[in-house]
Structures are given as structure tokens and as C-alpha cells.
Amino acid sequence: MRFSEFGLNTLKEVPAEAEIVSHQLMLRAGLIRRLASGLFTWMPLGLRVLRKVERIVREEMDRAGALELLMPAVQPAELWQESGRWDQYGSLLLRMRDRHERDYCFGPTHEEVITDIARRELKSYRQLPINFYQVQTKFRDEIRPRFGVMRAREFIMKDAYSFHVDQASLEEGYQRMHAAYTAIFQRLGLRFRVVDADSGEIGGSRSQEFHVIADSGEDAIAYSEEDHYASNIETAITLPPEGSRPAATATMQKVKTPGKKTISDLCEFLDVRPEQTLKTLIVEGETQPVALVLRGDHELNAIKAARLPGVFSPLRMADPKTIREATGSPSGYAGPIGLEIPVFYDHATKPMSDFVCGANEADMHMTGVNFGRDMEEPETVDIRNVVEGDRVPGGKGTLKIARGIEVGHIFQLGTKYSQAMGATVLDQEGNETVMAMGCYGIGVTRIVGAAIEQNHDDRGIIWPDPMTPFDVILVPINMHRSNAVREAAEKLYEELRAMGLEVLFDDRDARPGVKFADAELIGIPHRLVVGERGLESGELEYRHRRDAESQMLKREAALDLLRGA
Ligand code: ATP
Ligand code: MG
Image (tube, rainbow, N blue to C red; front, side, top):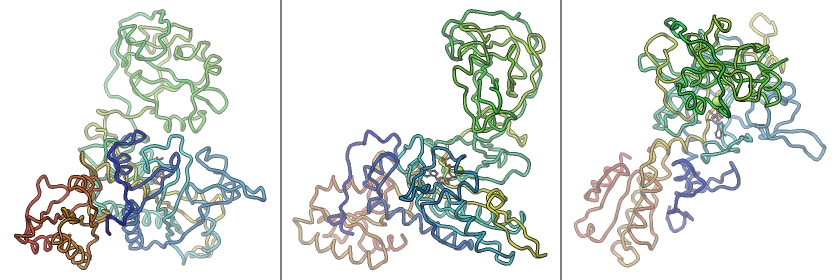
């Protein structure tokens, strides 16, 4: 490709709208352009990268025996009503109506459509197991689209769905996808970790996420260096603390704490540490509000809390009016003493003594509070996020926390959709049986952003070889003034392409500094410079994007080096 014919515009300035480096670099290198919130055009340079990612994904899916198909992006509401998700999916679902006033959605995922295919096409156990996949555009009306293509509204997903006669076959199919995903991310040259996205219950490998490790990741991953444990903190479990509770030394007192509604304000005012306080959160319940009590420095885990009996799922914080009715005070002063609604205590509250909590009265807190003496002994549950240093659930060592970008997700759905939508086959004995199902997603567009998060420096992108838009950038110096340089560069361009390499030939009449800066920004692994000086001695200047210095190589030696690229 000749740069002069490629229509590429690079940007010097860092675009103000881009918070993280991959988004900045994707805009600056001209890989994408923004149309509207969460909507992006893949420009020719970016599309070359995306196609490479897609190709690797397809090759590994095909190798694993999955069959590619292509489903419509627009889906009729009836299917979603059958599965029950028309009401459950909430405002992530973009709904629309056609000229006949019929309801549709733009598919955020395709379980319903594929289950409809399965119930019509699959009749016998002999057709199973089977795995269908597609690479397709999804739409999710994300609350906060950000980070460019990493959390977009419209994005491309590879989604696969497998159907099985029984659980054993599902597990086998799931393991096969686990292996295929591992191969995909290894081939892409990314550093990744597979984490449990399940509740961590016994045998809980029913859902795992593939995370690219990066500081800008939106997900926190709890992992152990001592064993294989790794879990999204959304689902990582906490264990009840070991050891006993220190004896009570203080007497309970009600103290004035005017306007001190947050733990940090309260701690500063009373000169106590957050670990000495309880925070009481009022959430919506199925029939009445529910109080959730945590140690002041801990964070509520919404997923775990929503699983508690009587708690509304998905978790919703109570509004100020409900809080007032439930506690008798404005929000910020709730405490567990004397509450007449159900109360759940987090495990970590159990060993606390002489603590501070809300008094259920405006501008008032209680200090020197103790379980057993001032209030009942708590029955504790797991409702908080794990923190670094917590015990590893398997028992070995303590947890570390890293950040990750979820690029893939594999899931054993069981019969959730096939049951609801009546997807059955005849089994070996001729009995009608509901198919077991797995689903497996990869964020194809997100991978490109994630790869840049992991592979860049202050000058630009450094593409891993498997996804680079071009293998080589050819940079002639002063080609527009030197015929010798022009001829040598043109010849080299032909030769490199004949070797099967993808070459970007920077034939612009621009200063070398401009060309070098662009080459580094767009991150092509190999750079060859053709200049008058080298030509005299039959040499080219070579530099890998990761090298600190260039080197002069004989023309043949340079070509040999690239032959391996
Ligand atoms: P997240 O937790 O990041 O919102 P999710 O768990 O809702 O993602 P899945 O339903 O598991 O996503 O979708 C499969 C894959 O699609 C994800 O692993 C992710 O890589 C990708 N993906 C999901 N939402 C987006 C988005 N808004 N923009 C880009 N890629 C996305
Ligand atoms: Mg997911």
C-alpha cells in the first residue's frame, strides 16, 4: 500500500475525549473515528487489524469443530418474551418498532435466536453435539460508553452456542471452547488470565472469563500466586475471618455527628479508623427493604447481595423516602440497632468490637457498640468484594488483585433457554429431552483496544505480529529529490511484496521526522529506511519497533531478516 493513496490522517494532539491510551492511540493513528457516543467507524488501517483478529478467531473456532452461520442483528420481541428477557434485560436493550407496530430489538446477544434455530433444526441426539458461531455486530445501550471500542454501544462479537444431549457432553464442549480460546489469545500474542466468573461454589467452573491483563482494565481480578485460583472480584468469595473477637472495653454512647454522612467524614470527625465502623446500607427488597451491614472500609458486592433471600435482584439502593421509613432517619445515619427490617451482616463484621455505627437518628451515631451486649450476635454472610490480603478460598495464601479487560467469556447455560423455549431432541431411548446449552463470546473489537493497552510506548502502538496492519513500513528519504532513492525504494517495495509481506510504502513528500513519527505512532513492527547514504554502500537502515537503535544492514541481510517475519 502506498501511503499517498491510503487516505490516512494521523493526529499529533491527544484527543481530549479519550481517557485511556488505547483510545487515544486508536484515534491518533487513524484506526477509528467516532460517529456518536459508543459508535465508531473502522477506518481502512483499523479494519486491517480487525480482520486479522477475526481470521484467527475463525480459524480456531473452525478447528474446534464449530460451524459458522450468520443470524440477523434485528430480533423479534416474541422470542425475548418467550425466554422472559424482554422484561429482564432492562435498558441495555435497544428496542424498536416496525411500520406494523411490531416490537423488535437490536440483538445484544443471540441465545434466543439460536435456540429458535436449534428447536427447529435439531430433532435427534444423533445431530448432537453441535456448535454454531458467528462474527457479528451487537448493540448494547451501555450506560457509560467509554474507552473507545472497549466499551462501545455497537461492537463486534464472536458468539458461539453449543447444544448437547446431556451435561457430560456440555462439559466436554465447554472444555473444547476453553482450549480454543486459550489458543486464540496465545496466537494473538496477548498476556491473559482465565478467571472464574462463577460464584466459586464447589465444582464451579460453569463460567469463566478471559482477561487481558492491563492497568486500565475495568475489572478487578483476585488471584493467588500459590495456586491456580483466579476470579473476577464480582464473584470472588470471602471466607469468615479466623481468630476470636477482642473483648469489649467501651460503653455504648450516642454521639452528635452533624452532617457526617460518609465513613470518611465520620472517621475524621470521631478520629477512628474505617475498620472500626459499621456501614449500614438499605436496599430494596421483594416485600420490604433490607439492611446490609459491612465493615466501614469494605465495599458491597451487588451480585452477591442480590442473591440473598428477600433482596430485590438486580440490587437497587433504597430511595431516601424508603430509608426514612425503614430507619426513622435520613440516609447516612442508618445502623443495625433496633431496625425492624431484615438485616444481613457481612462475615468481616463478626470479629469487631467497640465499633461505631449509625443511630437511626439524624446527625447521630453510636460509639463503643458491641455484639452480644448491645445487640444480637450477627449471623454473617458473604456480601463484600474481596480485597488484597484476604484468604484464598482454597486455603493457600492470600489474594492479590490485578486489573483486566474481559475479552472472552465461556458459559455453561444448562437448559435455561432450551427449557423456556422448548428446544428438545429425542435421546437414544427415544425420549424427548431438553438440550443442554453452552454459550461462548469473544469481544472482537474490544481485543484491538486491549492489545494496544498491553503493547505501546510513549511514541505509539507496538503491534504484536499476528495483528499488525502491515508487516513492514518502507521509508524513503528525499525520494522526491533523488531518482536513485526513488528507484531503489520502488524496487524494494516490489520485492518485499513478492516475498508475501504486507508493506506500507511511505511515498509521501514529507520530512523524514514526520514519516518516522507516523511509523512509530501506527506501530508497524519492521521499518526499513532507504537513503542516499546507504545506497552507496548497498545498505539499508533497519529498526524493529521495539528496538532502541537502528542498524545498517546489507540489502540482502535485511531481506533475509524480513523473510522470517
Ligand atoms: P462487560 O462485563 O464488559 O460489560 P459482558 O460480560 O456483559 O461484558 P458478555 O455478554 O460476556 O459481556 O459478552 C461477550 C464479550 O463481548 C465480552 O467478553 C466482551 O469482550 C465483549 N463486550 C461486551 N460488551 C461490550 C461492549 N460494550 N463493547 C465492546 N465489547 C463488549
Ligand atoms: Mg461477560
